[in-house]
Image (cartoon, rainbow, N blue to C red; front, side):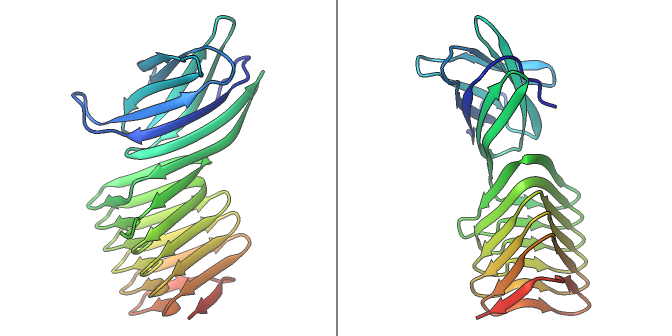
Length: 262
């Protein structure tokens, strides 16, 4: 729920993971308020965690704990107040541009640049922000790895896994559930999606899905694993070796997807 006062502003927020401090890991929020001086507060669970006053250029800086949380940003000027709320993840960098009018907030650009995700055991990574583009740059390493009984459940506007070793690797009894309002794009050097053992991967998009592997398979499953690809419109799966590869008793459901290999 976003509550907005009478204010027109354009703000750019960059959340950058910082080194551990005395009170734990922090996230830096750097932003800009357009054409007005303001005091900016960061509120989490009803408590103020940091504040700043914009400089002559409208810039401000805030530091908040690096954790899953909803951060309420309150802007106070000499004449009026405004506030909005964003959801953040640990170890991420975020760009958030908005313009506001009386009773209306327009998000111009909301991108979450997430570090590579690694979970195991009974751990979970559960995140919902349906107005955000969620991006993981693997920098040549696997973008998402889930092992054990762990669960990754992400619901966002667009989701991009880029420059991955493997895009998604699910092992043992793990589950990876990705859902988007718009597109899912996965590009990898090795397998785009790899399911092993009894794992389960679901890619659900209200628009399109694109999966590409340079050298191996777009989707590869072994054991009793299962991968379901469920787009509303277009779907393309490309593999340098094969588009899809099923082994053992595994299953890939990619009805309606165009399959291609080199």
